[in-house]
Image (cartoon, rainbow, N blue to C red; front, side, top):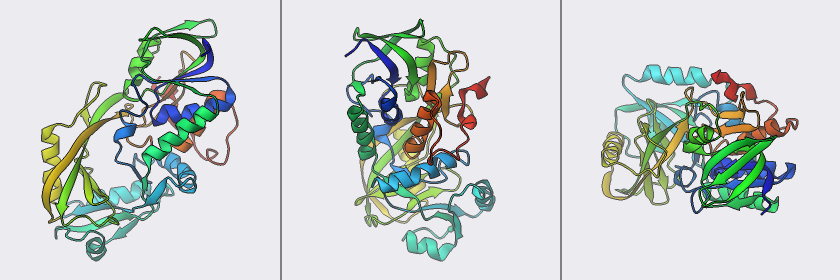
Length: 365
């Protein structure tokens, strides 16, 4: 590999893989991953759904812009979603409808009869829901591999087992050193390091923006009855759980957000127990076994919006981080937008309606 590249991207999860592929036509690109294979952390542990409202109203433009590309590429499969409510949660339903009323997301209020038809065995206290008919499953592995392969075809050099340990401004670019001794120079440094984004910023001498990793738990259950494969994604309107089928099994999360160090995180038994308790308050199904349990890290900036753009103090340091749990469903539009911001290329049909200023790191002062 050449000792100099135009752009070095740190992190080869969905964020790094997608932006590297988008940048490949604009110069030589290095994609450096600390682990032995890409997508080991958040990308490989995703609950794998595309939900128009996930992430909040200001993330909707990225999600909607990504949807047609994902569908045409064959990365989405039908699912649908229900945000369910019981007595005392009517205000939360109203607030949800108001928040997303003018975003372009497709939502509709449904009653008990439709809920029973969509979720057999749902307990009587759950009486109203907001339905998202266009919610879909994402083939995360296929999408990630698509971007890695597209990058490779475009000349992106992927280096695994390369943890960044040193970054210093050198002339018009950067001198980078990795834990295994490799050194390269790069014109621009792209921070796509997920939970490690603030750490990469510190290494480079940039001011962190406050991106915090949070642990999210997922449990795979064997239930009686086994879930219908067409069961929608079911979410509590208060954000306290979600579950969806995966084949003949159920994937369940307590929707936990526990601050964590950036690390190879694992599920905690208390979170597994909380998830199961919340599930049993929704449906009258018998849990036969907990077959798997895992956790991943979702990383948020203080305002819970992604961070895309050049650092205001170091323009050759480019942020592409803070994508929470919506980084996969927004990957096509987010990567395209970020590449256009970095290269100065004009907007296209996918990104024309997106207000990039909402996501700029300059918002942190």
